[in-house]
Image 1 (cartoon, rainbow, N blue to C red):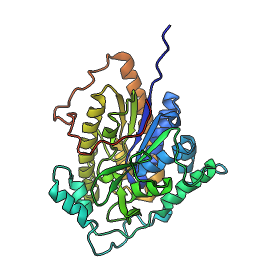
Image 2: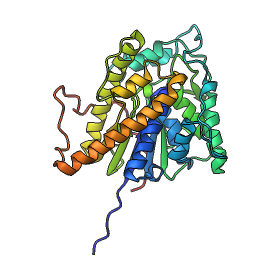
Image 3: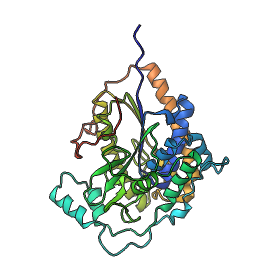
Amino acid sequence: MSRRRTVRRGLVLGAGGVLGSAWMIGALRAVETETGRDLARSDLVVGTSAGSVVASLLGLGISVEAMANSERGIHESGDPILDYRDLGASLPPRPKMRMGSPRLLTASALHPRHATPMVTLAALLPQGRGKISAVGDLVLAGMGRAGVDPNHWPDRPALRIVAMNFDTGDRVLFGSPEAPRMSLPDAVMASCAIPGWYAPIEVNGQRFVDGGTRSPTSVDLLVDVGLDEVVVVAPACSLATDRPRGAVALVERQVRRAATRRLLREVALLEGVGTRVTVICPGPDDLMAMGGNLMDLTRRAEVFETSLSTTTDFLRATTRTRHRATPPPRRTPSADGLAQPERRDDPPVGLGLAG
């Protein structure tokens, strides 16, 4: 009798600011409740920006339930408190009056196909003054709870944190063998350092900023890993949107649409190698709760509870559909071609997984 092959699972947690974090925790709680799956037992967890915080806590043994309780103001002894008030106001402090990265702007001009509008904008924005240390302190608290050395990097699940080199524009997966050595708190701070808002994180003469500048999730970097199933939770994207009236929200939705196009192209690449991908994004009700500023702390509770409800509804509807209908072809492009694969514009990145 042949042995049953072990299914290799991945979890990808995307960018999305403070409200994206609250929405993501609500979505993850719904996934665990509805599927019975312990997401911390994934073989690989990849986090970008807000997703890097949640990913690192999962890697340190902090349960989704504990994070959900924290969003509701319920804290068990020893659990880290997800309190982002020390990050400052919901608007960035006055930046320095000099360009963020002249070298990145030059690299974008020399290699325009390698750059994206967001990367070029990041280079042009003035250097941020904000401090992201509150995020590092949260990860340190999680490490203290887990009783691990500050230089420890979780390996069960394998944890990868996405940031962008602020001088070259290349994505970096901290935790992989090819990446520069960096402590987990520093890697998460780098992944969350929004250009123009927070100061870059510097290690050994290299500066790193928010990985969401390059991609909302970096799903395409999983193409060569050999995973069977991947769940993607993408707070910065939307497969169905709303019609906001405010100017700020209108601009945010334009950025969100561009991020969604990138996500769908990357998902098509991963599905093209036979990986089953489930994408969970905010819908119209979630976007209404979020508003236009993803750093607005006053909306956290509403965003979390809305996500818990809408994601539960989505998962139940998906289950009913799967039971009633034959699954669709693996790669059916949408009418506007959004599901077509894109050119891999980064050099190959090894995730350092065996098998």
